[in-house]
Length: 253
Image 1 (cartoon, helix red, strand yellow):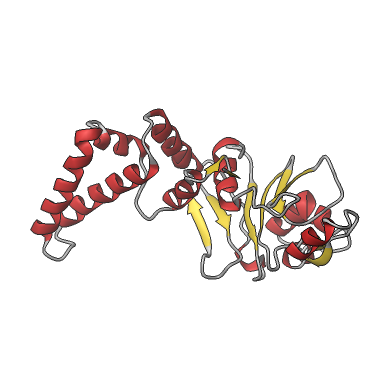
Image 2 (cartoon, helix red, strand yellow):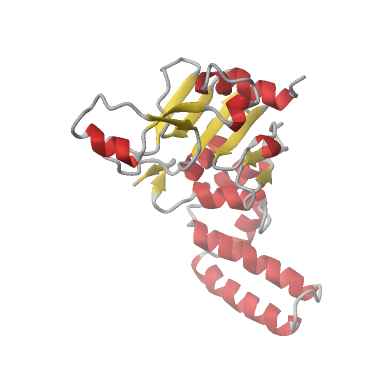
């Protein structure tokens, strides 16, 4: 029997990617017409030029979000239009990149992901995604599934992630400053615990750097505490994509 996560993906997205595929094939090797750079160029002369049949995610990463009521796919695949799947192209008709996939996923988590129902979110790339596919169970156990072995999965709490987004935006703090303050606070704590080489010097330096931030943002420590983001966490990884400086809700600007 197919496990729950495979059935969930196939039922709500995989069968739309490749109607002929088995549930596992619809994840590991879904075939669809892909609009490559070559196709984009040839369509300037012949708009009817079809996409090149290939595995979705091969060569050009695809990004997906799947719920029991709707699915989203951000890719260069051209699929038949269906009410069950919202399709977004990574590039426009001229070949100009228009969506940053990870930034789009980060905003979907903040704005669209259900807080009380399972979903699957992640990427389809060159590697087989089956082993890293995971069902997210909000509000806490969320995994952004990367088929790329070097990236693995990003685990986070949807509740903490949304709280951090809200705190950072409500206080109008730029992401680099917030991230730096969070890291400095951690270094002060690590030095106080004697977990750094030359802890007194490290603590003094971290406090001095934090004081510079506090001159501009007096409440920065209160804001960092309210956000509740741990350095190196999955929340931090997705916040980095959420606050991408060249994107607006995933759209490249």
